Image (cartoon, rainbow, N blue to C red; front, top):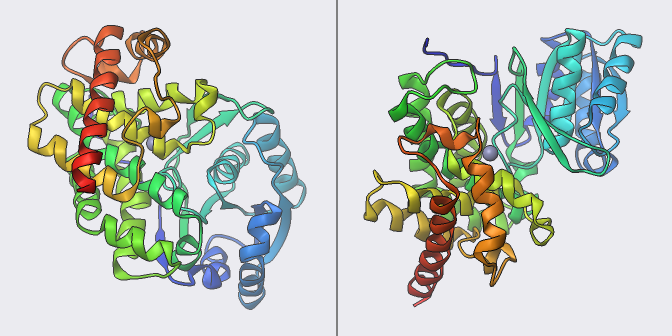
Length: 369
Ligand SMILES: [Zn+2]
């Protein structure tokens, strides 16, 4: 298998970056379809629309319907075609961005993502996660191209909810841990190849940035301020993690995270929170992981406020019978858990999750002393 690295064509991040949205978008075309919901438009609409005027860029303003479904992407594609837009820009959370990506691919338009929260690493990726009309996950698709532009306004992200920022750290924390497993076993990445040295370096860099700056950044975002640590962690959450996961590879942490939304008790959690607990479960199962690294990861999660116990996931007292469902998903054919050098069985996953809960409980107590 070839070594393959995929990436967006341009990544721009900084305080008030959205005030220059028009300038960056005008490089890609003359007319842009802006896809956002009314809440996001209320926050960033004025600055984006003003920058569009300054750059003499024509715009078609479209309100996102709320779920990333195939019909919604088809609706956006139709509007883009009817209006002769050159660029489709999704502005907001993951569902808006993923819908914009799908519509851009199906119409051959330029693809732009402007995340207004740093809650996961999808903005740089070529993937769309599909849902049904009720908001239930159905499947995901990887497109042949990544965004032409990823535009990240640090001030907007720092002013956003702290939970989303912390979730992004959970998603980013998993990247190196999972990519290492995929590299060691030669498992393919999401780009259709195997990992490059560059992807591994980026994944590792994201991990180091979190360890050094995660706690500092969390404190700053709680106050809605942008500091150098915040800029670094936004870069880790979106860029390092985005390139690292897509061109590195995934494993059990994400498989557990993808199974948790099936429990109604977990519906309040974001993807990155679920990945946070998935990471601890994965390292409790991994024979190659050393104990010092295990404590480093769990203590970091405790310090930034990621879920480290069943109680944190709103699953206090959950028994083996219910966890078995996750174990079975992990052990099924084609699962991301096939990245591991050993056979992942339901027993192994259930035991690891129970061990993770006990470890998280103990480290939480020790860290609070
Ligand atoms: Zn993820």
